[in-house]
Image 1: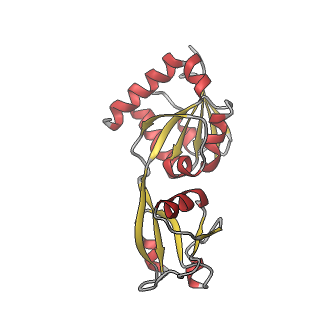
Image 2: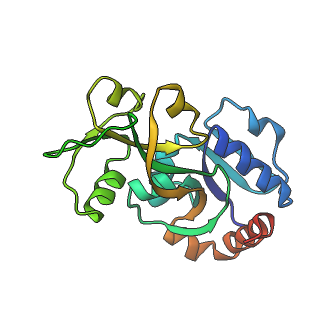
Length: 208
């Protein structure tokens, strides 16, 4: 049986994906859930897990250091990686939206958009025929409209609580986001039987 190397992000996605794998009948070590290690073995299933930052998972899969991975659709939209998207796992559901201060118009000359998703934001506003200036930030995106750095932000929305707590309102929904199972194209050919078996078991769990 071929060993599968699986890249997974820590946090909410990891916890929900772990439950899916266990529910699908895979025998995973309990310490996997709270391990501080970056590489964890599950010898009973011949799985090797790489625990990575969410943005890095598709990179590891694209370059073949991981055969498969679990990544948010937001990451896949932002970074055009050469990977196969095999299954929508339906976990960690949220969406990308535009937001800003209530009852405000965007600058008529060059609206400024703050985001950690510059590619997604650029594509969205281009599709609307709007020319904007993208300001890339890595954290506290909600701060940008409050200090006059941007007219709008483009960010992930889960419950909307963070926007509300900072006095912001949602304007436009851009895309629904869930986590996806992805595969390296070469690994998918060489280990197709194992990967297909995994996909089939997970599909039964998520009902897709």
